[in-house]
Image (tube, rainbow, N blue to C red; front, side, top):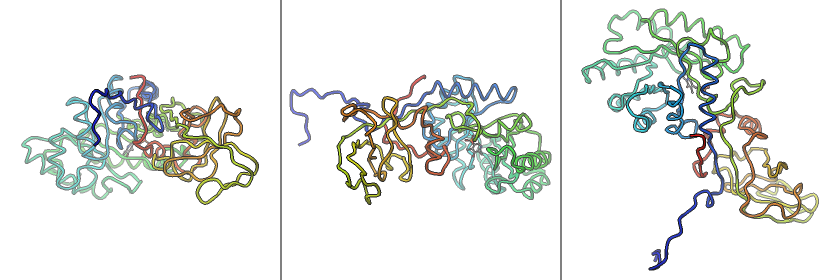
Length: 377
Ligand SMILES: *Cc1c(COP(=O)(O)O)cnc(C)c1O
């Protein structure tokens, strides 16, 4: 059972040909986006945020591409992500762990040479203890809450740290940082308020390089740049300036394979729940992509083939979507053909808009079932 018959040569698998959908990731475009952000930043250093596996695109591949542009500082969210990234990119670059080590995870973070982002007095104390155990000082960033109420030390905690001469014993303070809540809304008054509060809080702490801007923060202007910027989304082609033209290059393309085509008569119910009904004889194609691939069930979008738009019809299924292909010449599209799902016509920002979310969620949802092709390395 399950044995290759004697004398039978196994045929080399072609993962691209077998795949239901193909995600193309342009590492060259990521590098170009890094250069564009750097040009915007002038003398400010530019890190790369590669949490959540590089927003779903492969943290190791992305980090190595950015290193070729001279990037030597990265941010991940979890210790585990940091350990994996360290193994992939070697000992040189700085890897910050944004969420800080959970209690007890400090030795693992130390062993991987990670820089903890300390968000609370508890995380600071634990890092200080870890330094004692290690017998040498440990690198850290201190995050202050300048008004987002998500992560970082409160003003009272910052005051407590400032008042305690031993608070930072064994802690090699490399960065003081904070995060903007409304950076993608340039006219929101919270931006200026957070910037002022950040200045006030860090003035209480020992001098260290400062970092406030994420992708959108970079576009708020030089007063938000400080010494280090922390873009993630913009590197991956997400528009950091909603409502304006995207200043960055698209990074991903997604194509899905046609499984079968059919013609249905007037009145035929289409897909789960028969949410659509053929109003006339209609030609349909079913493609190999569904919500299990991270394409949300409530997305009202379309595919393209030969430049012709092919709207979704009926509900998105787990592994498939039905397209109305009546606009194509009969026989033009058949099993095995690839239709475009994310491209210049339908960007990640457009897909996000079609189900009321942001492109960040589109990227990080994209399933690991796709065949991935990295180009431009
Ligand atoms: C995710 C994150 C970033 C990157 O944000 P983008 O909007 O993707 O550029 C920067 N800083 C912190 C603290 C983050 O959590």
